[in-house]
Length: 263
Image (cartoon, rainbow, N blue to C red; front, side, top):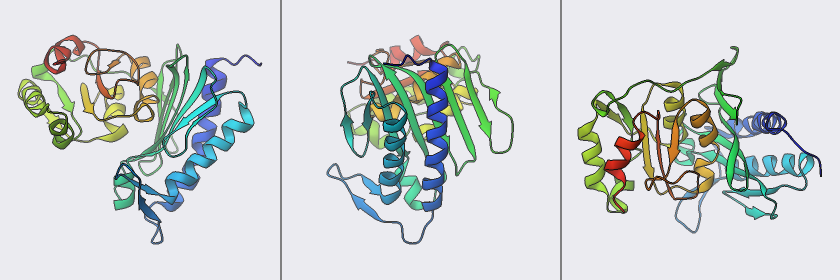
């Protein structure tokens, strides 16, 4: 089987993201967008399914021996090289015409994400990283530039995003997020992939969320880490498999963990 470098796999992920953007953005704000509810009572649109099919097709052609985990069509194959896909992260925003949504594409080897691409065509921006190659961002029409997390070292100077109060309330951690909010300078509930990309760019210093799946997180991890940040679950475990995310600029991680690590 052919050996691929992280650069090779990143180039493929970027190409897949470009094709996906053409599909998803064409359906954004479409009057005839097909919307339905899945078994877990979350929304899915024809744009979600068409985008994931496009990405899967591209992987099948370019990396036929790799496995795939996607939000809409589940697991395919059992290779240690697994592509993890969220065709539209932020479907609720997408179907309401809010531009905070994006396609997430990651490659994990033995469960460790080494490539991540986040493409947000409605924001006209894309972020990407591969292990050892730094984190990058590009606005439409501009040259790519390297990105870095902030140097904020204390919570009382930190700007955080915590997604939604409901998510914390549903897992019995409402008091925890209130404590976290009281400890910081400013807080926002931006949600979805953009919070983590703002962290990687240094605009936000800490992001904390519950009720996440691997495809919500895998692509974010290489970008946050290559930008100099730290990404774990609320229990402090690295990777996208713990159902929650605590991402920081690194300097704040242990302090934040001391607040949220309640189990």
